[in-house]
Length: 390
Image 1: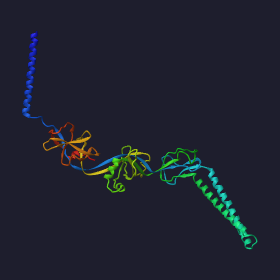
Image 2: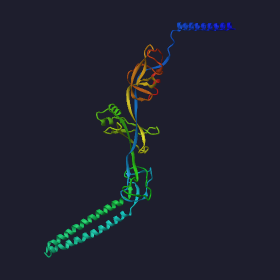
Image 3: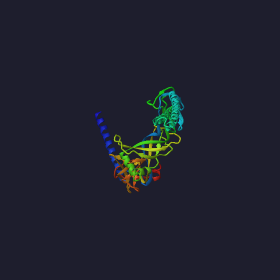
């Protein structure tokens, strides 16, 4: 039995040896017949220049052209409310009526005081007219005439004061009706009918937002501010602002606002806490779609002419640097460092240095390549590569 096991073991070893020798013979024959393994196919394309538009985006807060707090100037109770929250009002439209009967009484008192003052003036004038001929005839002294004239002057001053009091009383009475100072949209109305209000009330009666134009406020950091200054044409900041292209507004639902805006102002100081400068863009708001207090995203376009664009999938990153594989006429690839702009247009990088138009690069699969590796190029047309270019 032992002899049988030894015989089988020796036979198996012989089979393995023969098999191994056979494999090596076949591999050697394949190597002799075909040479090195065939080159792997990779898509390539030749770089061309294109015009492109880059969009810088910044979060923005929206404010109406005017946000006016409507506050009472007198004490009283809310008697009537003529508008509702969110309603559109015109300049001069009646908003509130305040019940303050004391101001009507002040008007009545002031009117009565005028009548009394006018009677006093008439009496003083009569006294002067009666005194003059007596003085001229030396029946009474000149002193009596001067006293009568001074009395008349005092009565006229009292009449003027009474008229001023009436005007003031009418002004206060006018404060019992509150009208809109501008065209706009009504905000919240915290005080209801019967509420006691005064000039020192914490909350306004409401807020009227003039949203015929809407201001979008956004910020740029120091680097972005310098880039903006270098990119836009003009010697002064006002000239640069004037040459800034129209900007777009992306609303919170992702849609683009149909009206274009203009960047009009830049704050004169950089905020030391945030390291940024505040910008303001103005947008027309003819149908009142945008409301004050909202948020959106500003898009500032930058047009590039004859730029070298390369698909992002053709670029790989190593230690913070960007590289592509350039293909020579023999199909050998070489890793080449490139510099790109911070902004991208769609799925393309904008190359600023490292490669130039006319060079051929690998489109996809850069992570499987090595320097000097020979590939089988599969050329792709520029129309195919740039079909999705924005």
